[in-house]
Structures are given as structure tokens and as C-alpha cells.
Amino acid sequence: MDEMGFSTKSKASWPKRCSCGVDVDSIYEMEPFSMKESSKTKILVIDDEESIRHYLKLLLEREDFQVDVAGDGDEGLQAVQGEEYEIILCDLRMPTRDGLAFLEEFRRRPCLGEVVMMSAYGSRDTALEAVRRGAYDYIDKPIQRDELLLVIHKLLEREKLRKENRRLQIALIEGYEDEGIIGVSESLKRVLAMARRAAKFPSTVLVTGENGTGKELIARAVHRWSERQSKEFVAINSGSIPENLLESELFGYQRGAFTGAHKDHAGLFEAAHQGTLFLDEIAEIPLQLQVKLLRVLQEGQIRRIGEAHPRTVDVRIIAATNKDLQKEVNEGRFREDLFYRLNVVRLDVPPLRERAEDIPLLLDFYIKRVNACFGTHLDGVAPEAMRSLLAYEWRGNVRELKNVVEQAAVLEESGRLTLDTLPSHIITPDDSSPGAKGDWLAHLLGDDLSIKRGQKALERVLIRRALQETEGNRSAAARILEISHRALLYKIKDYDIV
Image (cartoon, rainbow, N blue to C red; front, side, top):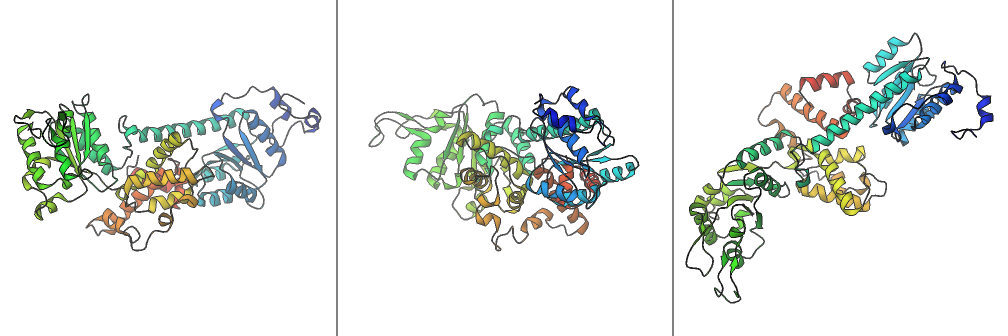
């Protein structure tokens, strides 16, 4: 046996030079190409000549790649049906199904990976046509080892940069990945830009949005971006505390003020002195307590229950609600003067259904977090599952998405989030839901009835979703979108999609 584990007898029986033009024995004397990062890369070689398949398999395995082979385009399609390959080396001229036919069918399928064509002398124009149709590159026969490995190296480096770019996109919000503020959608960017500006001033902030959209995360971001970041951020859910206890929680009490008050107790306003007090579900505060809250906002003073003299506090108030406060005012459930005191700077957090392009990033974030917490090994989302997740309405917003990931981590055995572990209502949404009737498109277009502008808006959304699903792989995205690679490039440039 030689150093690679092959029988020396079988080695001697190989042809000294295969039809691809390379001396097979010379592979043993070659120094490995410096590509340590590619040791787990899967490559599929498709060629009708056994000697070429054998040579390429031997060469690439020597470089620590995992290599499978196929004798024609049909065998290649069967191989990609059951495995995911990062690189496919495919000959142009083959019987049964040639390279162009393989490429055309491959691009129709939801497969990741890049195709590199191998072309003999005289088929260069055909190879260029293959690149125009979505192949990553082509190499000429007879195959030169260094040229082949250089093409593979460049492709892997590009994919490495693309993945790093995605990682940076996830952490785009300047270090707040740990808070779960994940997304690159324009609607989220606008809210965060407003939050950053508001953080520089002491003004009261009102954060509105549906349940599960991350209102508290936005409030914490405002606090961290402000000059009060070194002081306390104190949060209270106004709707979760009984009315008779809420006042004492907020303002504190003096010893002996009521039965059970055995010692002085500082309230949350004092705990948040020089910091931020976050009042979640502000619409649930009873009217009589709203009066006292208004006085704090006007005078900067509180009075503990049972105490005669006021105490001065320096607190930045951030309130949040999932209700329409103006409607609450109109119906007499919320004080108008308090509403105007709170509604100085208003941040409306968009629901997840209005920023679907953030869903792949959120999935990636929560998969990593759940793996770290539960010790599970989820590794991405299957394409068919991703399509269902992108189409779903997400009435519970980000909180619901997080729960779906946790459920998948517990139930999934294949290592990926698949349709089998998705709740049935996500796979087959209720026909009565707004998302199923296309209300998301109506929201996207608003009152604009222009077919041209509507088509562009829809194309922009679909392209962004496809790029997110394929981790920025434009060839794979073009396959999902069922357009040519060139057409996709034109649209990316035209719509200024980053």
C-alpha cells in the first residue's frame, strides 16, 4: 500500500497518461495545493470518460476534498438529488445528457452549489454560453492541475466572503445581535435610525407595535445608545401587576403606610434614577394612576405611599403598547394629556409579515441561539421549509418564529429544519388569513395601481427573498426565480439590491 492507501499493484496497472492529458503517476509527486479550509468541501465530477473521472477524483481527494463521480448528466442529476455539492465539475460533451442540458435542469431545481464546465478544444464558445446560462466558470481540457485548483480556490474564497457578508448583515445593528434585533429590511432600518436619533435627547419615547415584534428590544437599544447607558434599565409590564399593587411598585411606600409595610420600600422610579424606566403595556394603567404618572412627567417628582414629602427623580420614560392609544383616548380609557406627554417621539415597530426579507436572518440567529442553549445541532433550513416560512403571515411575529425554531430543535432528527417539524398551520395556512388572500401585496403597493411599479415592487421582494434563501448565491437564486442568471444580475443592478 502507498502513502494514500492505494494498492501499488493497481497503481501500476493504470494508464501512464489518461485521455485528459495528465500523467496519473505524477499526482503522487505533487505537493498539495494550500487550501486547508476546503477539507470538507463536497465536489461532484461528471464526465463520460472513466479515466478523467478517476484522475480528478484522485487529484481532488489528495487535496482533502470529498469527491463523487457520475458518468453523464442523468447520473449527475440523480447525485444532486440526494446530496448537496458546493462544486460540480461537468464535462460539456457527453452522451445521453450533455453539460448544457444538465446545467439547464440543475438550475430548475432548488439546489445550491456552483457548476464549473470542462471543455475540450473547439468548444470554447459553448463553454462561454454555459457561463452565460449560469455556470460559474469553465476550464479547458487537457486539464491543468494548478488551473483547476485555482478556479476551485477562487470559488471557495468567494463563498467564504459571501458567508462572512451574511454574518456581518446579521450583526449589522452594531453589536446588538445578542438582543435579537436582526434584520436588513428598510422598515426596520428606519425604526432603528429614528431610535438612535431619539436616544441623544431626553424626550419621552412611545414604542408601538403588535405583540412579539420586539418593542422592549427597541427600548433597550434606545437606552444603550443614550448617555444613560451606564445606569439602570428598569422594565415593568403594567398589565401583569394587580391595580392595588401597581402604585406601590412604581412609587414605593413608607414603613407603616399600610398593613404589611414593615419597612421602607423604594419603587421602580427610584430604582431607575438617572436611567430608563420602560413601561410596557402602558394602556393597561388605570385612570387614577395615570394622573400620578402625568405628574411625574411634568414635575420630575414622586411621592412614596404614606410619605408627606416628594422625592426628585431623573428618569427617562419609554412606554410601549400594542393598542391604538388615540382610540383609547377617544373612548375615555386613557388620558389625553398623558397621551401627548408620552407621544413625543413615536417608534412604530413593523410586524414580521411586512419585513419578510429578515426571516432568513432571524432563522439563522435563533437556530444558533437554540443550539447553544439546548445543545442541539440544527444546521439550516430545507428549501421547501424556507418557502413555507417566507409565505406564512406570522401573527405572533418574531416571538412565534423563535418558538417554531425551538420546536424544530426538539423534534427534528435530520439536522435541518424541514416541513416535517413545522406546525401544520404554517405549511398550509388558513384560506381566511390575510396572508393567504394576498393582503401582503396590497400592503406593499398601497394605493398605487400602476402595473409597472407594482411589478417592480414585487420583483424586488422576490429577488431579496431568493438571495436570502440561497445565502447570496445568485446562480441558485436565479434558479428559484426561474429567470436567467444574466437577467437576475440586471435586475439586482436596476433595483439597487445589495
